[in-house]
Length: 158
Image (cartoon, rainbow, N blue to C red; front, side):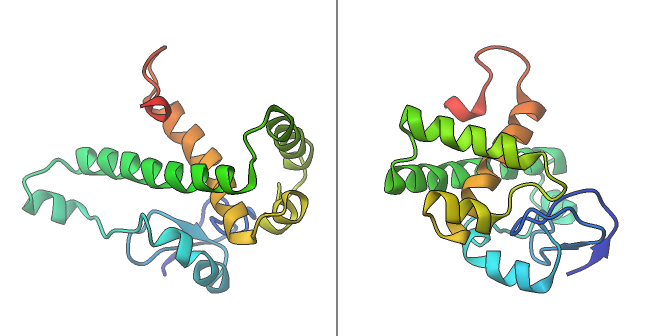
């Protein structure tokens, strides 16, 4: 893993990062420590794939197209895991959805945001599932913001 400065948050524990350790394989996911990277591997390996601009060039593909395809692949993998967790714990009821939204809003304002352990404890999921659940929301919002141009252009509803 290579270190660099950033204002991102750790993919495993959501802590703000003063220095970033990126996944050495895909270079797309950041961690605050090797321990967090190791703990997150089971969830991350589903979408982890080495991608470089030289690989893209060798395939005759534009690097931006590869990045966009990888973003959408990551989104689809996250979406599948997110849906599995929702179904397993019945988190899709109006009551649970409201509880989760209120909890995230209330605790998300703190200095470090919501930790996977806090979310897991509150909603009875494992810390890894909490990480996946919260990261899907974050990834979904980032991709939605990046790609949405107007109504009907939502990659989350395909």
